Image 1: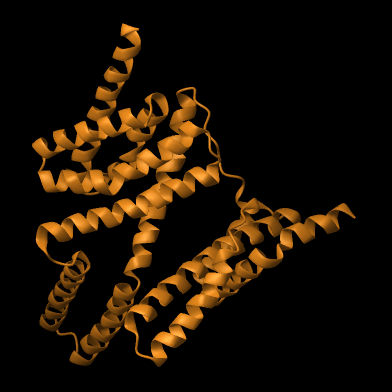
Image 2: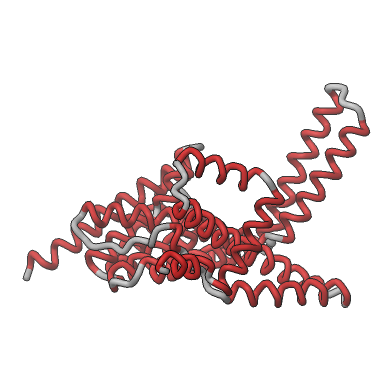
Amino acid sequence: MHQQRVTPLTESGLLAALLVVLGQAAVYLPVLGIVATLMWPLPVIVLVVRHGLRWGIMGLAVAGVALALLIEPTIAARLVLAFGPTGLCLGWGFRRGWSGAATLGLGLVGSIGAKLASLGFLFLLTGLNPFDGQMELLRQSFEESYALYGQLGVPEQDIAESRAQIETGLAAVALLLPLIIVIMGLMDTAVSYLLGVRVLRRLGHTAPVLPPFREWHLPRAFVFLTGFALVGIYWGQAHDMQPLYSLSVNALVCALLAGLVQGLALLSALMQHFRLSGFVRALIYVLVVINGLFLQIVALTGLFDMLFDYRRRLARREMR
């Protein structure tokens, strides 16, 4: 009995120490810090799977306190808030034996909530909108670049055109900031999930894997989201309702991205059906990615595939 109590405590200490090391690397290393940040939820996943959610929370708290003493309390709190829940949610899904899609979905919800909590914490500390601060820093950096271009003799007309293009891009980024948070959460969750599966299997645990990409089917809700988003965009523009317009634009882009994933999965299934070589498949993917028109066609096709399921019809023809 005494050994059973010591083992979780010892392993929790080791994994918490690993969290501290990764946290320091995330703060102090310029390039490898990004890798360390993406790997940060991994020890939490292992801890929750092996010893339960309570030990995962305790290990996360210990690592947060240690990082606060070694680095800086606000940075440590933001790191714990932004990436800790991702590991807790994924670890809980793995421990409960959920499917790969359900575990990934839970991790995504936890990751998005964590990012919002981190931004809210920063707002409480500073009283400033974190988005506005980041946009202002971007504008200042571009203004410094424009001044440098002027000193180098670049024509004012070219600088003015470049400034107009940058301002248009910054306006689009400001409009799509909610979607950017979702994409950040998705990237964080996907990396943690894939690494978690590999590590857990190395440790002797069973971990569900996602189905092959050609078999992916996203919910039909994205089709209805597209319709509501189009109505919201029209209504927001017609009645000058900026919050509704912004929300609808983000919803539309999110639905189109889901359609793009579904369309690429359908494309993968078709290439598998026609037994195309790996080189031809890679070439087709590259052509789709670098061509805006092809991207739109694939995204719209993916939305239609959510409704009509072309792969199931193709399978029926093969059976005949």
